[in-house]
Amino acid sequence: MEAQTLYATGKRKTAIARTWMKPGSGKITVNGKDADAHFTTNAARIIMRESLKITETLESYDVDIRVIGGGITGQAGAARHGISKILAGLDPEMRQKLKANGFLTRDARVKERKKYGQRGARARYQFSKR
Image 1 (cartoon, rainbow, N blue to C red):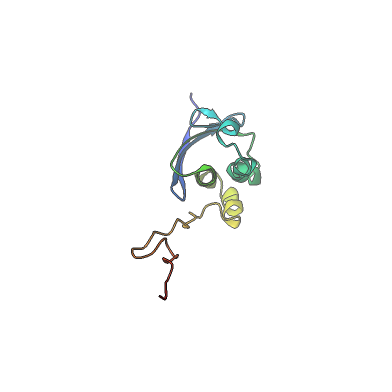
Image 2 (tube, rainbow, N blue to C red):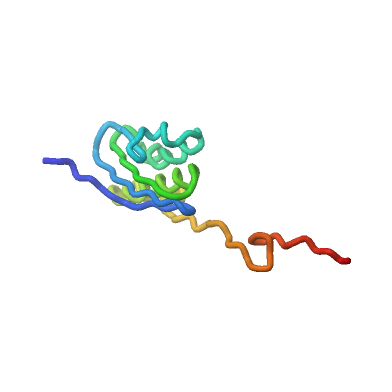
């Protein structure tokens, strides 16, 4: 009998991470590559593994992540969100730990749109008095 594979979607900024998790040895793959090969910065690697470390399940599950959009940090945050959602569904005790650290909340901060008549979202064109 095949082990049950769990699925969740995580989001951060414009990145979307589709996450599958099954019992295993702790192998994490992102877009078919090893997680450390995909996430080049140390900060992104830490962000992605945070929820597994807090729940002490780093060596218990194999995680497969398909992530699209955004940059490295956004993708790492989306991966963490997806992993956290799966872990929260497994055990109520894990859910409390994840919720206390804010990993189950979708971070709603996104880039503010540029407004017409302005140079950017908040920046105006330079004013000339004369």
